[in-house]
Image (cartoon, rainbow, N blue to C red; front, side, top):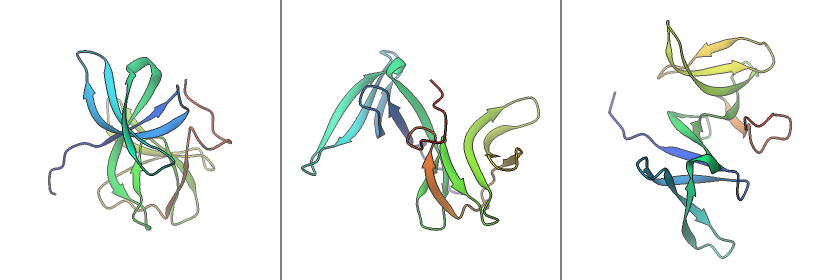
Length: 131
């Protein structure tokens, strides 16, 4: 498997929007994000860590080629609906798809398949925000 740099996005509690991360400065506690304006222009905005939720890309895509991140809600080939999150415990560390409909978790591997990303826990009104 080809090694890749991790990609991130953030939920911005200031603007209540999802942004791609350009740079993370852990020493200053600042995130540099890419903001798209209605004119089509792109701007860099900075946010402090307490104003955002940081989400990592899983390295996987759905059947439509959409990248899957932590916090996404996906439909599986069996039509089960799952929320993607990162779990660390004694037996396993990695991305997990937790079923919203069947109440169980599925470990995500390189060949795992999602039919489609149908939303995320921030912009989907039926999901609770974590903050």
